[in-house]
Image (cartoon, rainbow, N blue to C red):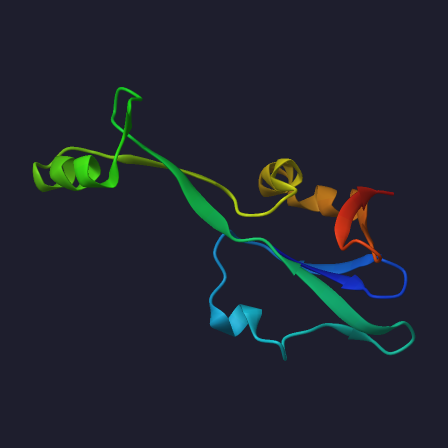
Length: 114
């Protein structure tokens, strides 16, 4: 998810939903501006692999995962937000509209409840 916010007030003014954002999404030039409030800042939260598991739920190494795949077996991949506030991003992944229950603390750059 990419969250755009007003740099002066911390109010959230828009988002780009999703777990993975390519260079086009993350370009410095990509922004949302509100001429009355000034330029917008952004928070980008990517997701990373947190575990590889067998069908039975056992955690395995990447090497074991490759071996299982080569033998036609399924490997399950778990992901988690790659962000210090990952608990909030787990919630926002399930219910993106809840992003508007937050604002950005402009001093710290962290999401806080309104």
